[in-house]
Image (cartoon, rainbow, N blue to C red; front, top):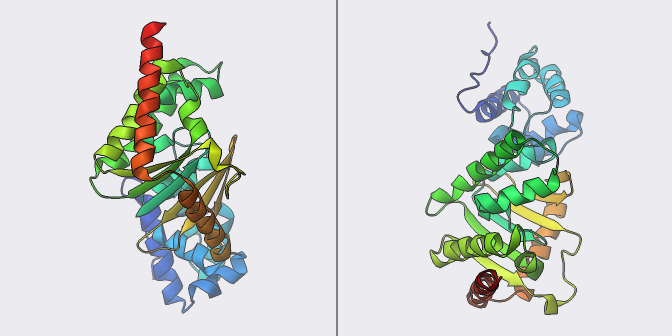
Length: 280
């Protein structure tokens, strides 16, 4: 009997490969937990690969072919499904983000990527890579703006951001660029497209002082938590770990200003920057 055909890279290869994995697993009579054991991953991790919210790594693909008897199907096709325009440490998170039903994010230093303006994003990438050619920066900015097109849908995903007050006070690209970026965030909130809160300095110690946090939930896969640092990122799927980060986010929201007061503060800071820019 002929094996499954190679995947067409033009038609959502990640989703197609995940569907093939689910089909092969069920055909083999295995649960997600049972398939996860020889790969040393959880059943929820298998579920995320099947749903397309996590990529199938090459080392896992080799093992899947061995366990499921699919010859070299997953090994051959995992590279096509894993092609990404994003840095390796962020690629899985960005791709999961595109499938998420809800995104909850705590930003300690910068406006979250999904909410950045083009000028703000350009300043961020130039700061990260001060000697990079302009075309490299252009590609990074374009990829970030493409991510933001998720918000073109009027209702999905639900995006809830908690911004540390440091995000508002840091003048990325100067007062004009930061003012425009804050007004963009405020505009999305005014149009009821996002929920935004500000965690002010006087809130003191809080539950996520270790850094940025992103939580994603999906209609047909377990939730994920993404923790990010300079040039690094970690996607967490272990249920107890995800629940711990969900509690941390809930505590952040409880410590932050209300959405109404947060919006007023964001707009006030943007207005202050505009006046400062006009007087300079």
